[in-house]
Every structure is written in C-alpha cells, then in structure tokens.
Length: 303
Figure 1 (cartoon, rainbow, N blue to C red):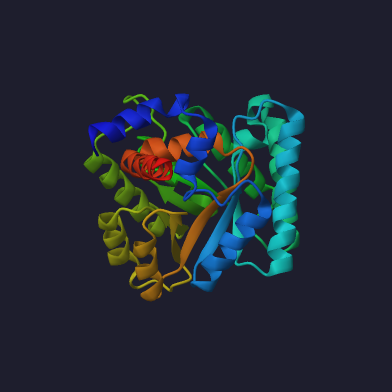
Figure 2 (cartoon, rainbow, N blue to C red; figure 1 turned 90 degrees about the horizontal axis):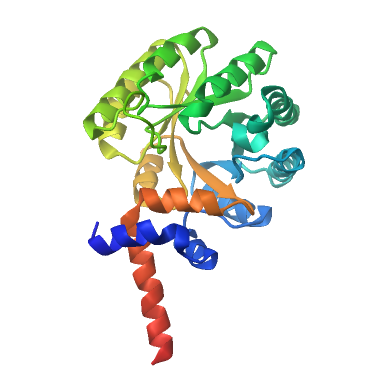
C-alpha cells in the first residue's frame, strides 16, 4: 500500500458518489435485482454457490425496513424462478433493529418464513459490536420458534466469540465464521493480526466440535490451509468456504477445482454507498489502483 493509496482512502467520504461507485464496482452486482441475478448465474456456471444481500443497514424508518423485506421476497421469487443456487444474507439493522427488537424480529421472521416456503435459507449478518447481543438473541429466538433454515455470523476479532460459540452449541448452529471488519475498542476486540488468526482457529475448532455447519469466510490462505487440515475427514456437505464478490477470485477457483463448496457473497441495491466505503477502506491498494486507472482514462481522453 502506497501513501497515495492511504490518502485516497482518507478522502473517500468526500469523493463524489459516482466515483466511489466506479471504485467499488467489482464488489457490488449493481443497484438492481436483475444485475445480481446475472452475477449469480455466472457464479453458478463456474461451479460456485451464492448468497444474495440486499444492501441496507442502520435503517431508521419503518417503511424503509418494510421495503427491504419486500426486496428479499422478490429475491426469493427470482431464485426459485431462475433456479439459482443461492440463499440470502440479511442485516438486523436493515430490518429495523434501531426501531426496536420486536419490529426487527417480525421482519426477520417474515423473511425466514418466506424462505422456508421455498426450501431456502437465511443468514443473519453480524454488524458492529453494539448489535451483537440482539443479533444472537434474534437467532436463538427464531430457532426456538422452529426455523431451522437460519444461520448467523461470528467475528473472530471479537474477544467474546469463543464464549458465543459455546453458548450456541446446543443449537448445532450454522455459522459463518469471519475475521470481522468493524473497528471496536481494544477492550472487546483483538487488533493484532496473529491474535485474530488464532481466535479464528480456536472458534473453528469449537464449532466443529459442536457439530456446527461452518461457512469459512476468509481470503486468508493460511486460514484456509488450517481449515483444510481440519475438514479432510468430513463430508464435503459438512462445511463450505465463502468469499466476497470481486475478492481473490483465483483463490476461489482453486478451491472449486479441488472439489470444495464455495459460496460468493453478492450484494446489490440502492443502498450501496456505505457498503462501498467499508470495502474500499478495507482494501486501500484496490482503491488506489482503480483511482489511478480512472485518472489515466480521463487523461487519455483529453489528449
């Protein structure tokens, strides 16, 4: 990462939205559902599964939360109609968590029930640490209501994660395990790179011991190797790898070629801006490379 890359990242919030959209285009299918469908179809053709995410978080308006629920219902309709190999991910704050637990629970149940009617699956994403308790409570609440087509996410960078694994063990949960991209207080989060890796492996071991279905969501080859050491005796339907759209596709291709199940995270929607900033701030080198490419094209046109 160069100083220019770092400078670009610091300036991102002040960059016009069309430029941010250009910078982040590899991470997002587009603003419309039909664009997400095309991306999923291409992934499926390459032997990959998908999870579709309707972008939208920190919703503070009940009508907007309802609109996201309806967007997910449209997603399920297209998944079934096009016979896509895809499930969905949702964010509690996109379903109105800031407006109240009960409203969010009702919206989440509506999405999960719709998914169950077509034999599909919903995963509740994990957001910043202020939402962790409520997100886990929602998961346990709906699992207790009989919804087995529901999974959750745990972030290895949080110091609490191993305890959370043990607390969920009785459910034999479906868990996406990731490092986590939200910056939290050092009192609750590991910041050291190797500590996060160690926490990831500890959580993975605990999840496998609990009989959980684990989705290993990482682009870290060291962690992928540690995972492969642990799952060689499991059936290929007992775990999966997950990667973000546009990130390390060659690594994903290798996993598929070796016979492992891989799912690509495919976000789309009008609420793309906040997600774009997070992805680009996480990857300054990409932001810098695309910005230089864009500048070069503009200068070439001006010659």
